[in-house]
Image (cartoon, rainbow, N blue to C red):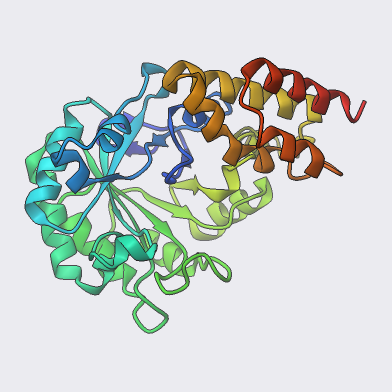
Length: 325
């Protein structure tokens, strides 16, 4: 049984990785229904939280159905990160996660996210201060290191464990790789099999099929699998992996009707949470992902990207559903 503090997650939990502009509550609910065992919010700026920025505050919202859930924060200033953690804890999530892995330039240039991989001592200091400032479990998501010559994740994991984090999620790339090349799980396995490590170690990177998840679990012994980009437009991956773990059988890929129904549910969730206009606009980034394997979808996608009337969108989704019958 894998536990983060007192939170029980099952034998080999499947975790939805936090992704900016993707893992809002409407998408998290879909993934939860498909079998995700632990969810995370989009990452939230510590500076935004302490300034009461509306966008940052909204990311704190979640429903009881999403539990267990972690709120992820990022930043580079010790005092700001402490205050952000205290603020986030008031929303009563199950845990607080610190992002030390985002490789995006606008985050790294400020010394936040993966930028902190250049200053491990400061990373450890901030993490320690956050752990001491709240009663909730604190976890960390990070990468193998800054670049090919600085893959120091074993040291990082030990030092973060020593200051009190309750789990670590490791993406199998360096900051310099961004999302290029293949994720290397070898060092993730070395962290997990390090005798000094007593906390759960979750692996992340390039999992898009159930067979890959089982192979990484068996080969490297990780406590759980975190899935990010592999879930975008493909939330049923959680159901597929669980079925494969339990039976050894591969579920057939969802039919077009199922994809359309999930898309409808996603849109409905978003409308309930954000309102009709915002939901319609934000769903546009998901359509291509949901229907990427559909032949000759371009004409349907173009129309979906321009429609602003909800009834017209619903009718068009029905047209898509009927297109392959």
